[in-house]
Image (cartoon, rainbow, N blue to C red; front, side, top):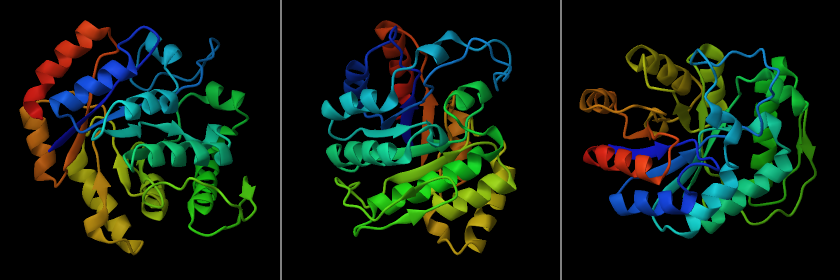
Length: 275
């Protein structure tokens, strides 16, 4: 089992450079970072985990800048977003950011895609909440057009681009793409259409949901051997990781605390037994 990590990196936590070096030295597989541009104070969207929203949500570092620092000081550590709120981005700009990071890191980048839960944040970006999934789908198609080997145009309902010269390209033509979200027919259809797999938060219920995803994947004509499922933000135990392995899962992303260097390094030492 490959053990990667995720953390809410903020202006008050361990730095991306220090964390990336420590992860690579200990043999962890990767570092995934979340994204929120801002958290409106007047908010009716409930925190998905329940209770008050933790303060780190409003202090998150930009994931692409932080991952760029991590890439510069490592050679093997894989880098990813968990997740990027694609609907909130200009897709031409985002395509350039993704391609540049993947190129400079030698193909180590995974694009985690999410639809979001904070309606007020999305609305400040001009996103119509009801259409955010289709908006994401549209932007992903546009980005793939820009990553194509030859100039390729794309015309969608919410985004378009002329056939263009757009370099650098992602190292493998397009980065590995994983979609986050709760299990369901619509999510699984989008995974099968334009992604490489699923980022299920916590990994609960996979025994029941994985067969459904695999069926959707195969009905879409995708090779069963290529589906990747990566449980995300997991608080690991031996039993939990063994259960994932029994389901054919080969990578898990464990949750680190949004703490200072001392707290994060203590947690890495505790989790090192799983690596």
